[in-house]
Image (cartoon, rainbow, N blue to C red; front, side, top):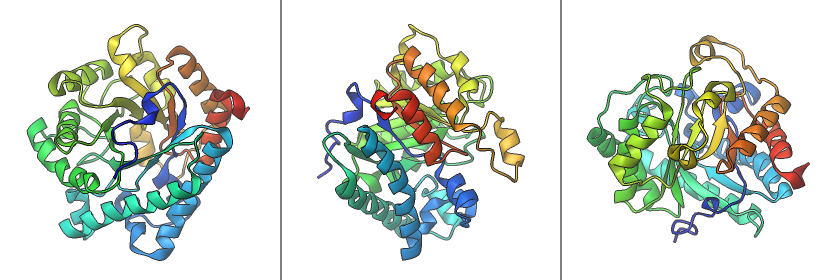
Length: 315
């Protein structure tokens, strides 16, 4: 039985940390080969699973030391049918890897969870296509497509599912409907361009409102990921209803645009201390934002800096 599926602790008024940029860390810092940016391929070998465990442990150690909660996301951002086909994974192989990734995180939770550091296990979902480009699915097609991966997670002890780097509201509606149909809470995280809008040109607030309106507010909460704070701060307006639905951020280390990052052959790690200060100002202005992690270019050093800046006892 899933431990927190009926009562997600991050919905209470306390800070939760999350990990950083898994794929960029594993490729640029660990020197691993991740075809098509797919971390889940590491689940195929004992050595790969050990690398993933070592990756998570760095972040879990920070959370337990600081007395924060932690969101454990599976390495399955690419483990959906289209990307699986490119990587040689059929439906049963994908189901197996999604389920095995939950087992990996259950083992880590047994080792690291304390009363002060609850660890929520989340099945990570990525967009059907490229996280930097607009998808073309309507909501019904997206629901059918993502239901395959969501159903795999629903069969396990996953507490929730989290859809990251979505670029359009139709795909988000599909994810939310599929999660609701399988009775598992979901989180929706949009990515924005340097102007604070989705790649389609839609305002972030409008995208969130459209998903909520189409699903009767089915997502447990929303987040923003894969963009630097300088890209999305201007989109956040105090007093607007949709802003209170945004519970966290997993920002990029770099202030470069998605197009610039796509063309770069080196990693831009930015400034961890500066990122921490930006998160501190963000959480002071918007108290509902209490799930703090990183995306492309960030690693455990950035999360430590964010924690030090935003969690009083961590200083």
